[in-house]
Image 1 (tube, helix red, strand yellow):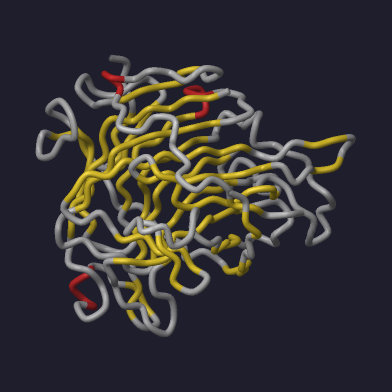
Image 2 (image 1 turned 120 degrees about the horizontal axis):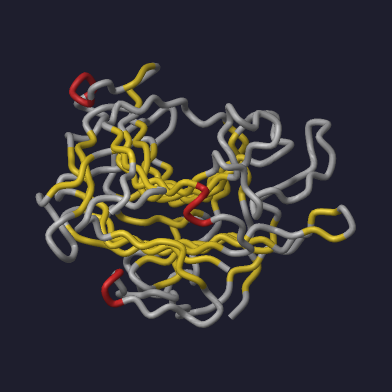
Length: 326
């Protein structure tokens, strides 16, 4: 079922963060719409050991951490047996300070060029987990900002927690699409699309006003699946045919469709052409990511300096990652 989609666009500079996590290098071993009441994901319930690749897709990588990392992978965190979704290993770490990063990162060589890219992974947060200013779910880029200062682009999903003047951590906060597109003057763009579908009785997928609110998966494993489809172009003009979709435990939870995630007009840059599908060698895709915890006009570094606003330290674990492409 199709419904009109009203998107609130807010241009703000994303809070800068510095990774303090342990990095382990891989080793060889326009019309907007939201559709589908009861849409289902492509890999619901699947792990690398139970994977059945859908027709039309190609497997780019899979990772269960049982034999280390692949040659085009790196992690912020560490591989351990402390918590695993399947098998005996997962990667993870402890969020205890603003800017901490827990993620699995695929280098461009893992996925190459594409028209569509799809990633599934299983995510665990400790039972005391709360959402501060933001926690990243996943994002994909065409480059790094240092390698491509003019043409850098990325987009993904992020929990948007409490921004000024509240800053309070919460068990449930809006999920948004974060994009860094050409022509934005160096700013991230935060889109707040409604839920897909709205008010359907799914407790992880409810509208609150105009925002889609997703509770954190405190004390449980959750499957995230993200489908990116960058817009194309026709005769030098960017088309509004891109989309990004988030599935949670097999259900379509949040999406932004019929827009141009990799190129927009503005700031004297002209009508930029897509560059996501043929990324620079420095490009990457990350699942998991940074946590941002603010405290008044400063940062909760560590969380304990702002106990009334920041969460208590909590672990995050990532397991059973599957990366596909077209």
